[in-house]
Length: 239
Image 1 (tube, rainbow, N blue to C red):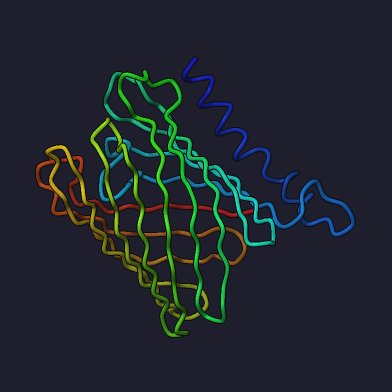
Image 2 (cartoon, helix red, strand yellow; image 1 turned 120 degrees about the vertical axis):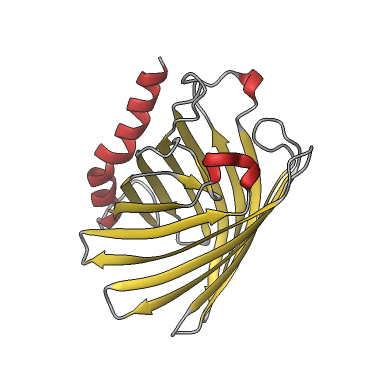
């Protein structure tokens, strides 16, 4: 049953991309106002806030996003998982929505994210939701972003948690963008706070695909190999 759920959700993200995109691009008639896009990706590791979600193995990922054109946006994104928990959870599916926009070079966004782990017993308390807010400014030579996520009941019933994130990206010509992130997670119920960071670059291969190569690390030694430093390569495409 778990395998069937995973297969259906990932197939929806990947195989339905073409018809949805074609409908969104049709100026005369479309199922929804605004823009509908989809994305797929393959990575050698799924790192979330500095911690592997696949036991340092590869992952297949995909998503679907709807921008209403009026500031509101909604979407879903999924990834294969390996928590080394006897396959209690084999997939993560995120459902999200928010409101955002731009004022000149300043951008903003706020909303809600629900993290769902189909097939995992409710006793594990994997599922959770977060509220988020983020803002950014594009200086031309570089773009900076700040964000905060908060949940009253974190993964595994570990209490409330607040995640502060910061990013910087620098375009290096038309084909490459260098970027870095520095983040801090405030945790409760006996789990120590920790910092994670990443540094890498993305190669934009025309309209075909992107290749992101990135180094991740944390100061969360108490998490052992789950938070070890890691070099990750991800190939993705947006339709």
